[in-house]
Length: 534
Image 1 (cartoon, one colour):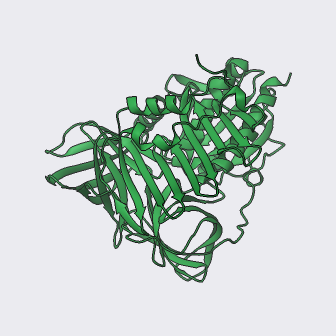
Image 2 (spheres, rainbow, N blue to C red):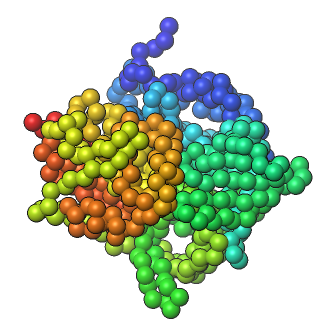
């Protein structure tokens, strides 16, 4: 007979492990052994054996009702439940579970047991694309077991290290490749490409969301050569690529570094004359030698960066489907000095002082509403013209997204708006996206819109506001706003279609769960107040 639970509809740890066992997943692990780093190839894993030390850790039982402080938060469709032990007598000090659509998207456990003769400290953290197991067990004078294992979880397939060859630098990314899919893995992010037609004996994979493709040939069982092509503008640009199979690292590191770059750091980009051009925030998290994080700007983030600290150097890269970035920096007494590279030849110097405060403006303070100009527009959609004055929007709160299908920050905002629309549409919320395309051909522009809608399963209208778009053109078409300085820009309207708030840019999930959760909670509460207002 199952024991009564404290919080309903949460899986036990054994149920969670069983769900992993049933999935068709592979894991590429790296581990620390005496300060040396060992890399393993992608393989299947016995989850019950791998996580045996945590089998009896579930504290979601009625008998623990006085032993834990329990908090539960629902943010959109994501549920977060946190158990914190009220005393050090409890072996499990902390357990956190996050679920979305009935699926575990985060599971963490901190477990400690100390006595006169032995000690045991275990930290476990799981996301759908990675898990960490940090284990330190001792029996004094008899036994010492230390393990630090990180498993990169991926679809079944072959693991590749693919280099995008910039003009003078190589930008490495981790790729999982099988017969039907190519997936770029940046930390916890998975960027999908689906197999298309075969062209001149070359394999072609098209981005799930953007107008970009990988085209390559296998030159041997372990090598590929080809190009990554981005067609977001009229004239596509392409970058040569090459790859090696069964290479489990992005940047190779053999020893655990002594430097740690975790934290938030003000950073500055410089022009060719050495004049500062942009101040941004470099937000990083270091796990032994592996570094993940992003760069926050006033108009959006640089998506999921992944890399390493190697000796006195920081190396980061990403490929998000529409951009490819490489950051290199040397480290000297808490200061990073480096070069940022992207595309076929662009590079820019940058510098950052570790643990310094940035001075980014609030996203609500950048673009203002022009009180004397009402917001109104009418643009074509796939199903005909749509106007804010149409009857379907009358007396309803509306969110207007000024975006582009080519923009990765806009993709993040679209996912947020899609989920908000699904939650609040029945209560009256409407969402309208105004798409500002970079291409000049309206037929291509509508093809991009159709792909954007289908890939995200969007239920709200996406209108073609402009082709050959610039921010100046967007500002001219939206006179109710002071200026469009960022794609995306989100405009929230009340039932009278008065502007309640304007949010410029979008710093999404790559900026960290605490920051992004706070944003989502704030804006979902605002949306809730708009649909609840008479």
